[in-house]
Length: 495
Length: 123
Image (tube, rainbow over all chains, first blue to last red; front, side, top):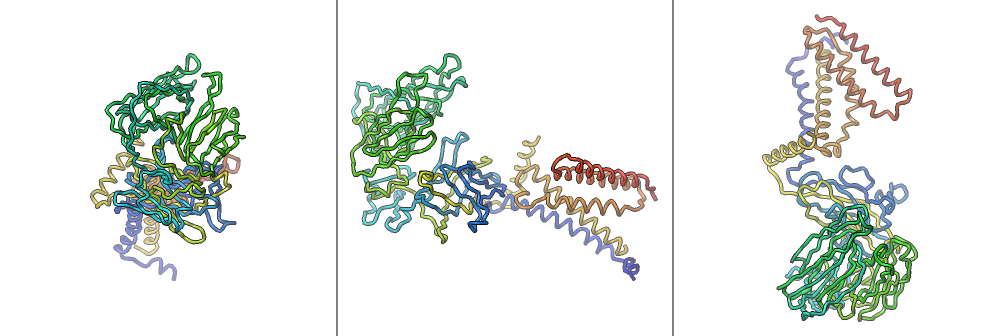
């Protein structure tokens, strides 16, 4: 019987068809994979729960600031963030124009989150965006968007025009660009000299005097292991570049510390306004002295008073005037252990690499003094610093911080492009933002900042991150051309 | 063609198609990283397909009329068997005595099969 069945003759065409079918199926799978990888509609979405099992989205790092949760105890899989900041790497699946990040998260004792893209390999240039604000989520704050493109929130009972008011008191800004007030001073032939020891990158804000700016920064490179660093200086008016320069420093291979290098910004025929002098440098560059003929200038919101080892025998203390109400101070050397005062508020640094928050809860609207007698301290503030009371002015409204709206400082409006989050229930929320990206970006590095999270013993739980890459849709011909282009590029890579 | 011959023929075609697709996807992943692995775990499929391919092609060898077909068959089975051996080394934790014995036995089996097939006569 079995022999008879096995000897049964089958038409040859049927065998041929049965043999061809698996090959067709294989070819279809191959083409399907190509369409998944190079979608015709130009939209490629990838999502993950940050447990590390995805080829495109990687969990937040550094690992010591996070906890991976496998869902056994909490009932959900994801990552818990316990310190600030944390970084997430995302591989790009080819040349795309934008990447929209969507994140499902919930917070514990953390009123404010910021999320952004790291724009350079050194991690110095960040494009940060508002991600979550506990206070602005409340109904007592109303979202406002005027025809001129100014966006923000005003408190209950405050007119919408408050956002565009020239009076910066009661106004805060949260990661939004603002137009500086038009201000001008009279030129003075008397040059003021301020001995400082500012470490690394700083922003100076200066009012042009009779259309002129004269700023001389005396810098020093203290890195013993390189022949010379580079300092870039940009001058901007309302975020528009007016002038830029790059200066090589002498380095320090031969005679201990590097020599002092003067960097002069001498600009004329400027329109009245508040100019921002942006010094881009690494932490081995010190600004030892500032000389200027401009009457009003401030530094901030970041200020780092460095050590003076090998430069001077006396300590460089920090004594300045400020409008800041909330500051975070930190030192990296034990020589920086000290009590720091901000007006009547005080804070003590007892450990290195540990941020200390100092919040003013008073109702003083005038400038107050900040005093750090031993220097060697980094200050991140919501306001600005002037080294002479007469030189102080407010170039922009104060920066919104996690503590700003809780206190009694009377903030009535916040300039920000913040989009309210979508509530998902059970405390979970969804925020999203679309970042323009470069076509040749092989990978993207995102940063999530939760200011003050460690000092509050707070946490941010993230259970899902989705990234949607977008580019223009393609027809079959351009799709084929893209494939050929990718194959050529790949061949060049492996050759 | 008898049903037995047809089944062998179709199974061989199916296995070859599966192997070609997997090797094609592997090549695509090599040329364009992250093109395939995020969607299909090729290696999870490659091992069983390779094993079945070697078994089917190795054991269904019959008399052939052409010397070229004979050596083509032997070379292809040999290549896939060696690829399988290479893949097995990836799964071995370390080079302990058990691993070496396993690899040794697999190599001897391939060697014996090769000897027997080289010795078969052409019809």
